Length: 188
Image (cartoon, rainbow, N blue to C red; front, side):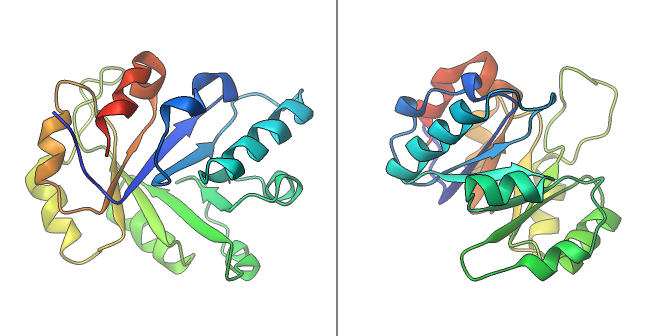
């Protein structure tokens, strides 16, 4: 089963998590969200240049300095980032992407002027199976008021075909791309 959306956001914690040769279309955007401090800046810079040559957008999570050093396409604001000053850095070629888990965080990301908001959790996730998730119906109802919301959370090979029922213009992946890199070949 293939999924056809306009945009795909892939969240990576390490540049080794993704093989750029698997991403053939220019619909892909990478969000670099490292857990540790960056030790090999030159490798990261080289990776960023490869993204440019393949026409893959590259965003850095919550680090404006690194964003400027890498000349990234924008910044990704995690749900815990409540800073409203970040919208002052908005330029015509600099995107703000946000992340939210509830309506309050969603409204904050709108105040921050995020062009896209990754909204989690669409499906049940394996690492916290008892946590609440939105599901298809509630997510589509939310989409009626907010057209720039992108689903995130619990998306895997088993429920991939259900994403054609989502009205969103894109989707976001995090852990599944690391577990099964071949999932990117099913995204058109």
